[in-house]
Image (cartoon, rainbow, N blue to C red; front, side):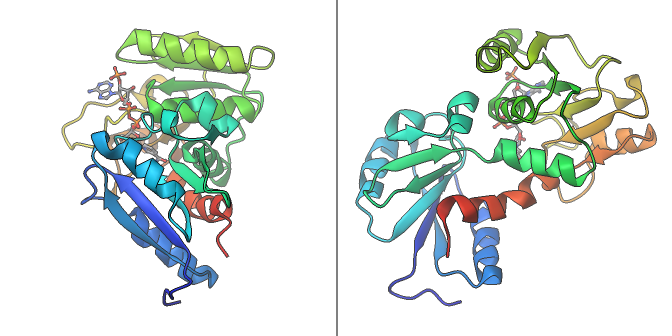
Length: 264
Ligand SMILES: NC(=O)c1ccc[n+]([C@@H]2O[C@H](COP(=O)([O-])OP(=O)(O)OC[C@H]3O[C@@H](n4cnc5c(N)ncnc54)[C@H](OP(=O)(O)O)[C@@H]3O)[C@@H](O)[C@H]2O)c1
């Protein structure tokens, strides 16, 4: 559908933005659904973030915007409210402009990852799950898994203080239902092991962990989204494990974005 004067507007902000393909995919999804509107991309430097959010409140026709690096965490103080998902993960990757112009931050990295897990036949409820990494996406996934009923989440990270801070933060939210433990690496007691680091993005990256050290029934998942297989995928397939590639967490997010924005 061609945008019209009345079209709903969506933005994608980041810095830099040249490599981002999300807006094209988002617009293709709108077109497939026969929905009105168009997303455009804006390069917003960190020092302009406060000014951008102020301006966004007054942009008539703006339904909301997606937030890419490096703004996912730093945007929080400039928003009017956060969903529980965004608050617990400590980041927002999508912001809805409400009818009164106020801005609501939310995150879909966790729900998208969970949808990918389900699509690959893994149910996290009652399970013990290992996460390598303690950055933004690890926090989003940890929150989603705990909310989906995981029994225990084991966290390892290059910078242990960051792992400890994440375990404490999520532990406070899920004190009754899920425990969080810091580990040095994946252990045989895990039902699933997730790479939530950027390791695997470059061809010469080392493995985030070795799937061969885990049993054949362990579900292995990656957040790194490459067109081809990552080294972790090749190693998991050699070990006979089910493997969830990074793209399986990204594709479900388009429908979730449209739903959060109320795209029509
Ligand atoms: N599939 C999806 O839905 C999705 C969504 C968002 C992001 N991602 C991808 O997920 C990855 C992480 O994103 P993020 O937003 O979480 O980034 P982030 O907040 O910067 O966190 C990066 C994480 O990777 C670790 N790390 C980075 N380089 C490392 C190395 N050489 N050795 C060991 N650990 C290393 C960091 O450890 P330290 O704490 O020690 O620095 C930290 O745990 C990126 O590749 C991103 O593209 C995927």
